[in-house]
Length: 190
Ligand SMILES: [Zn+2]
Image (tube, rainbow, N blue to C red; front, side, top):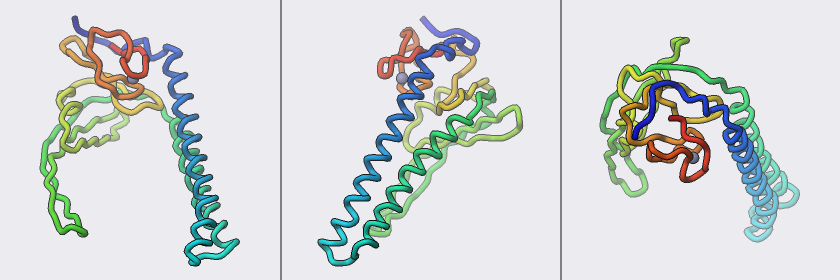
């Protein structure tokens, strides 16, 4: 059994809105926890190490904590303003990238799998995966794809020859014969 050709209307399933709401809530909760750790941690550290005094250490904690919350809010805001758009896979290439670690003075060579998506507006989005070719192999040049508002990854238009499908919500690889994602239970757009 395989998928079909055409973008799936299942993206309108309420499970996706619910997933996004829950993921925003989790991101904000996580940021608040980090902020509280910073607000409490800086004064304690300042006191114990003798490197910082009150109230400076508290101000540091508040500034760092505020930053965590601000970053989370900006990400949530950006997701809310995102739009759905269609594009085409226009380029694929594989190359090596060598990184140098100053501390250990060692070099590591990675294989980078890159694919490019061109929007109808002309803008090109470049995606790279290091040492992992699963997504790279999933797309061919010329494939029509759709980006869904607030989600990463793309829905492929023609899924008729595929054995796997990526969950648009959480990115998990699923068998094309399944109806919902094994991990997050969102419907598979097939
Ligand atoms: Zn999922």
